[in-house]
Length: 340
Image (cartoon, rainbow, N blue to C red):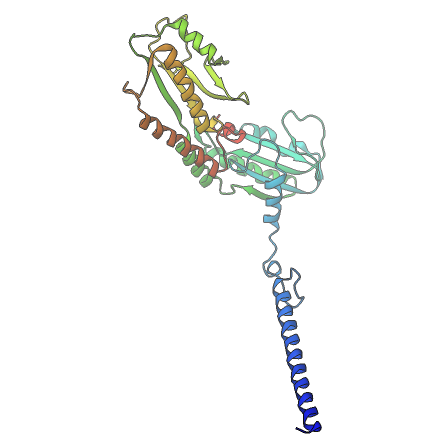
């Protein structure tokens, strides 16, 4: 091969290598641009974002804000119908809040504030106060059942009247379909509202030795509450369970010297950590059995075995889980208000 041919061959190889390198760089650049376009949080002005395609929902934004972070203490969106009124301009016309009419409704709460100040309850309000926001809430259900249709209609009517009298705009923050939501919440309450009861009766004698019974109540840490029941409290001083007579009345050692049995009772919706509290109650029952020589029986006075107790524990845990899923945890402030 001549020198000229050899030089041309080398030149051809170099040109091919340059082309390969150029194409490889172009491919890398293309892939980089494509990745950046798909992953970048910034959008092209000619390619509107998903948020821009969907009309901005002002009501939803305000609802989320007040529901998540700005509700007054003791107002719960899961059990209250909540209406928010924003005035066009600040007012001090307390008379236009229709407080006297609202107060006649059960479980109703009214709060006012100006701008981003703290919410103030209108309860016991005296003197002129400037406000431009109103929060109206009514509890949908209590232990007696759902709020009556007449009360619900009155609440809705007064809410509209307040809005119109004060020239404001109304947004329902929760449960705008009040009557339907009240029915559904009442069904849930009926499902979980249980007083779990276990019975102890003397094994051999027909009645307990009252002196021993009083001693074990004291040793086990029971305290008599304002209603006369002997109550066992947890670490947070909240009642976990109580002891009563067979007729579910407080133990009265003076009036009833012959106590034929006692009930251990746990109000599940009002008890924190139901399953743990149930285990604490079983431990207390075991102490009573050791000291008083008694039997744990069902409603037919048949002794309960381990399998029966495990089934009861399962039901207790099931109710606790149902309340947690509903965002009304057992023993919480919300549950205490709902099941008071």
